[in-house]
Image 1 (cartoon, rainbow, N blue to C red):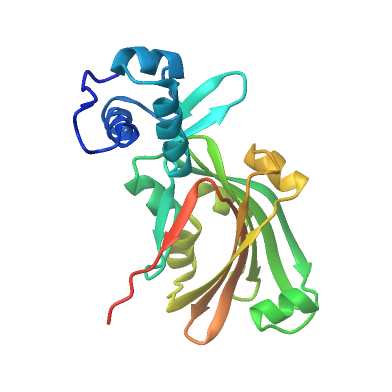
Image 2: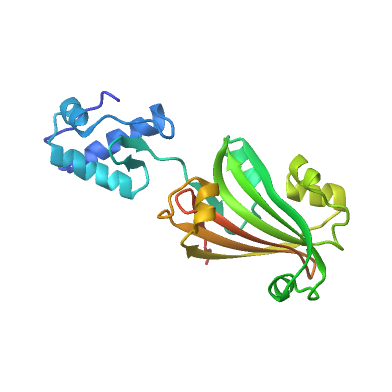
Length: 243
């Protein structure tokens, strides 16, 4: 840990000073999931009380800098991936910008006749042919999002699982099918995840999930409907409002 010290003569509360020191050390010297020293070790290093350390740690956990594992200790929390709601989102490009290695695993791929619910989502005829595929999205081999996507077969003839595995989907749209995406709409909802989603995402069912429904348009036609379950502990979304 850094050699900065807590100034006991300062008007700034001791726990706030300690928080600033610990956060700076995390940001400059530590990585995701690194274990930080115990409360006793921090007390001894900075000559502060256990109550000061606990208050600092509680605030840091609340702010998402650290997480605790019962019986094992306290660790540096993984980064949250911030998505600007005013910009078109590509998981692959977003992870690359963060220095992460993106990957997708196609878990299921099939062609089927869409039921009434899917037809309504795609604004398509009931029983028309659609591709349905499920992908697990990863960053540095860590599961981040589970996606179920529906595409109209008529717009993407000859699509295969192999093509999906060989390139990013939106790259494939433009390069293989000359698709011109004009807009997209996303709907967000906080949800509880089920056992299958928790298993794929490698998290406990108690971790909150974020359901994202995406409708992608080519002019006035919906060409993609995707339902995603993202890890609520990994993603945060923001929007800037201008007067």
